Structure formats: structure tokens, C-alpha cells
Image (cartoon, rainbow, N blue to C red; front, side, top):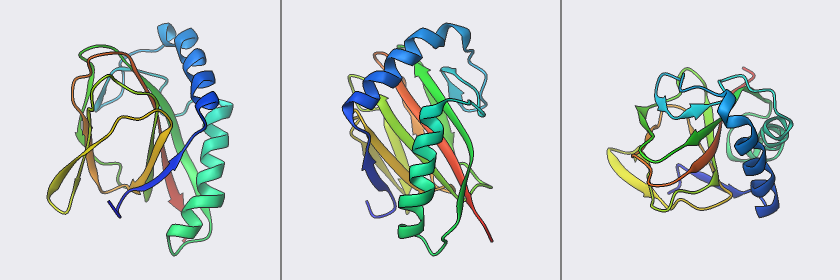
Length: 157
């Protein structure tokens, strides 16, 4: 899908982030509007979020858009347990957003609505998708633990 820009995190990064999340998740709550799973909250100050956000801002977004200067405006981590899900939503007024699958569910559960069609994404360890923030997406109830990271970006006008 041309509206989704893919890149992959190395498996060792995913393993390190997963280990971190399993240590932290009990201090998190189910507090975001659309995400019905435990979450770090929108402004998590984790080094790996800064590093991945910097990579997106410096190496990916300037190459796939007409804008050279990007800023990460938020970043968070989600920990899904069996039955957790995310309601259909978008990330406006931000410009672009990213979802990274750190630990996939046993079954595919992530969907995007692009050009009035629903697309199922293969839940794959390390898969990161960057997309226009107006694109609706959701997560069906998961059947096993699932860890994702999410970020929003804005360009300098």
C-alpha cells in the first residue's frame, strides 16, 4: 500500500523494548481515549522512542514528503493483553503518525482504512508503518500479548 511507508526495527531492539515493557507495564493504566490497553501515556520519555523518532524525522519523513524539517510531538507504548483493542480513529491535527509492532499478536489485528477500503496488516515483529495522520486505523481484540509503539509528527511550516 503506497499510503503506508514501511521500515523495520532490528529484532534485538524489539527484544530489548519488550523486556523493558514487561518490567514497566504494571505501572501503566488503560487511559488513552481510543486505546483500550495498558499504555505509557502520550508523552513517554524513553530513549528508544527518542531514537526511533529521530530516525523518522531525519531519515524517512524528509525523503517521502515535501517537507525537510520534522518534529516528533508525542510518543507512547501500548501493552495489549487478550481481548484488548483500539477503536477506529485518526491522529489529526498531527501531520504524520507511526505504529511499530514490537511484539505481534498471534493473529493479525491491525487495520487501516485507505481510499474507503479496509486493509489488514500482517502483525510482524519489527514492522513500522508511517502514514498520514488523517488515515483511520484500529486494532481488533487481540488473542495474546501484543506490544506496539506509536508516534505523531509535525513538519515545520
